Amino acid sequence: MQKSSSTEYLYGLNPAFECLRAGRRKVHEAFINELTANSARLKTLRRLLDERDIRVNLTDKGRLHQLSASTEHQNVVMKVDRYPYVTHTECLAAERVLLLDNVEDPHNVGAILRSAEVFGFHHILLPTKGVPEVYPSVAKVSAGSVEFLNIARDCNSVTYVQKALDAGYCVAALDAKGSVQLEEFAKDTHNPLLVVIGGEDKGVGQFILNHATATLAIPQSGKINSLNASVAASITLYALRPA
Image 1 (cartoon, rainbow, N blue to C red):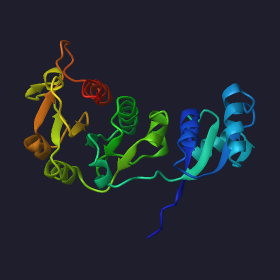
Image 2 (image 1 turned 90 degrees about the horizontal axis):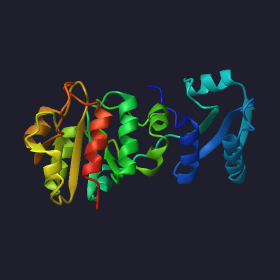
Image 3 (image 1 turned 45 degrees about the horizontal axis):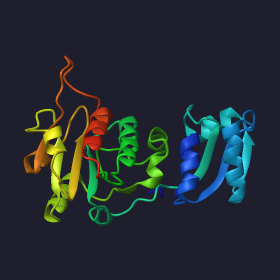
Image 4 (image 1 turned 135 degrees about the vertical axis):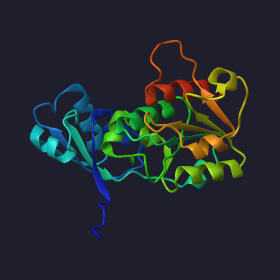
């Protein structure tokens, strides 16, 4: 079996800046479009890279496309260590934890992680199957917020929930047919709290819905019967953010 690489190519301006600011990953070298290297933000980025003695390669847009496998690199790609996951044990020591279940779209994962960082859910559980890893594409959509999150990816969703319940967590799963309205649930303090967000197609798994402390519904007045997963997550995380 071929051993996976210990490095990857992070791309996008915000991911690059936040990776450097967080300092959790080693940055091996950077690649910047030679035609835009003197733009204001890239000049700032180059200064930060120089301060850290990180080699900067001026190159063309085609090379950036090739390295990032994307056209959304915003003229910068950095070769970095792979994402530094933590263990679920570390996450399940926090008062607010988020679990993504069956969220298959990398764009939704990145958008949810961005909201999680903004609203104070800094400990995240990703199942080993059914949810994308923290790929560079996910980091890009998250605007680099993944660099400031503690993300575990070492169990399946059911195991995470079982461990959380055993540890005394209130487990709140978002579901369109939930029995408790989100705003009613948010009126009380629930510590520690594990929030479970499901995907748009499959939603939260039935075992988790059956064993959750509460299933939460977001009230809706429109004619469309569901919200985008990342939008629903943002509403929920805002409502349940730590005081």
